[in-house]
Image (cartoon, rainbow, N blue to C red; front, top):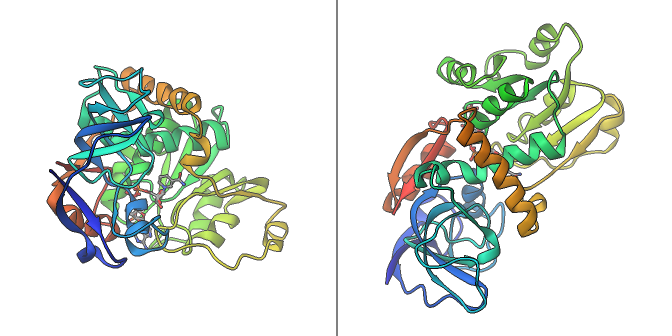
Length: 325
Ligand SMILES: NC(=O)c1ccc[n+]([C@@H]2O[C@H](COP(=O)([O-])OP(=O)(O)OC[C@H]3O[C@@H](n4cnc5c(N)ncnc54)[C@H](OP(=O)(O)O)[C@@H]3O)[C@@H](O)[C@H]2O)c1
């Protein structure tokens, strides 16, 4: 038996229950991982609330973790019990002592990266990798707008932008969050709860505006984001922290300057083992070089997953939060 968090109904954090479950033996192609640290992500809240439907209920929760291989199913030849591994993709169920998932979703974790750092950076770091290096291949010299720059993904983005020589303008909701984003490498910050974001971006860029806007806040920032772009440039809408963007009239892209828009996901980029490995190699190289430092800002025991989610949803966290089994 092993402890795991599950939910039988969608709703607030009170739907999360800690239960004892038998994880069973891994099936063909699967690996059972004994988690040492588990990542907390906003997507976990979307599944809990029902914004993203879980495949079935009751369901486990969470898609990010790091630990050691506990058992392997038939046909798994490249991993053995005791190997150090990390993962950032489904199936749901990472909030657990033991989690079983397809071997192709796991990457070997280099000795130089500890379990907590891996759990704090796999999903968020792979996301920044594809957003900055694939969705729009930043070369250096560009100016970009990044919302929620002091959050988990945002803290990694600020550091990665600095390493690439990109001017990242970060939005945040407090002076403390502004200071953190700037420490991490944001070129400038804007408090989007108080300041006129479009006017500030115009001022900071001498009227040129941004080459790319990365928007994970969604509903509250969609239109402002479009107004911060140069003509014919790219809007990357990659999250819904304030609610989903709905009812968009495609004509708005014409009105705002013949813009491009994309709505990408990690699963859409890390869609083969080879692509996942290539992205992880780049993330691990960033960590090993010291250009990227992912510190764990908040730690909660697995049993307090609901409390951790309330803090994330209530904008009380900065950087990465992990759960400890
Ligand atoms: N598409 C993908 O592949 C992908 C992958 C990973 C993450 N994401 C998205 O990236 C975003 C960041 O994820 P994360 O786990 O690192 O979370 P996070 O950034 O640590 O937390 C979300 C932040 O969003 C900001 N926010 C603005 N309006 C908000 C509202 N109404 N309610 C709550 N927060 C609000 C808050 O920062 P301020 O207080 O500074 O406003 C908050 O700290 C999420 O939207 C997530 O879904 C997308």
